[in-house]
Image 1 (cartoon, rainbow, N blue to C red):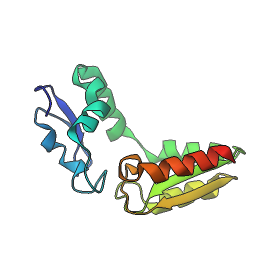
Image 2: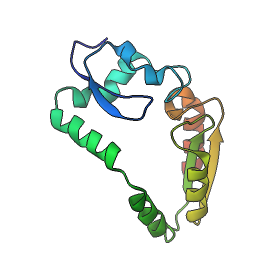
Image 3: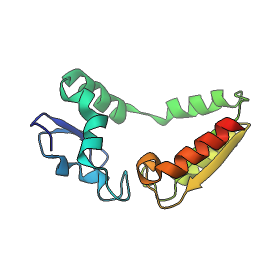
Length: 143
């Protein structure tokens, strides 16, 4: 539970909003949208704490989320075709926010990409399967 400070949560309707509520309000983490098993309140707080005292951060975050247009991502993807370094793309098997096709397209765009799908995880793979993600990153970095 927070100390009554505004909480910045991403609702399941994918709209960002200010909420003045207990940590349980961050239900998005508990219904599988971000993590399959939920994210403890103190972890959510650590992610969101910088926004508690800054209306500007919350405003800018909301503006970014609402304003992301595919023309930006398509332009970035086009620029990535010239990136020749190895890339590890890790996606969650049960991610309901970032579709598998997006990762597959990105992997096809990058000349030296490896796409790995982590089982039993949602968007925040680092919360659902931290050991597996660490293993993948260490293995990739060592190669």
